[in-house]
Image (tube, rainbow, N blue to C red; front, side):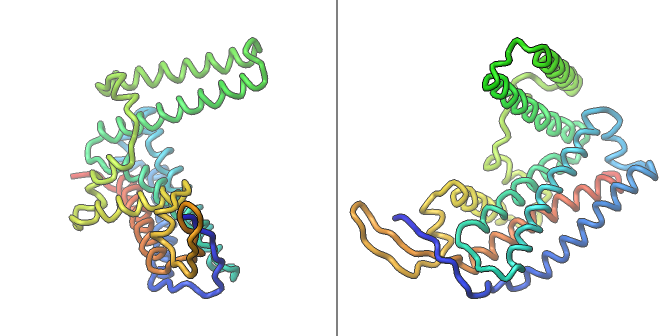
Length: 279
């Protein structure tokens, strides 16, 4: 079945979401205060111990960046809903998903209770990003036919130095090359986030379903789209059928709650690591 979006003029029924989003804003402000506390008070906190070396410093740079990406997409979603314009059935999901995903990575880095495991996870993120950076750079060089350019040689030398530093950091953390190169798979790691799910044993399955739905919609999966929308018209066509769809309020609100919990957990962890020490 194929689907065509119907832009609805009816307001979405958001329930308590506005209050949840307001709570996220307040927590975001506390993240900023936690940064100030960490930088000015030099307390005996998890973050202070983590940041004794470069790996730990990058852990909080990455976590802060992930939280920032999550919050930026979250605010864009809220602004779209508040704009008074009609709501499309496909696009809103593509603001929820990056908020969910970026917050997940923030939680994933900061969730472990041991310093060593937090640093190992941060290093895996840094290594993955460096490999992606190298791949993008190589494509730019190829497009420009600039492989012999002096600046390209310098850039590749810098890349080699960064990679060597990461390898040395990995060795000090007892990580093998295979562990460094292990891909971070959200569907594998999401159920392991005890900081999110300790109090709610059924929540991993709930969030895993939300992730798969959001990923499906983003990539044009018609089954995922039809599962999250209301169908107002259906017509049989050669090879299948086509339908006119509009956003389903309940599915939308449910996905927003899942994203909000992930954002809240990421910010709570960031604040906790920055202001207290694990006992």
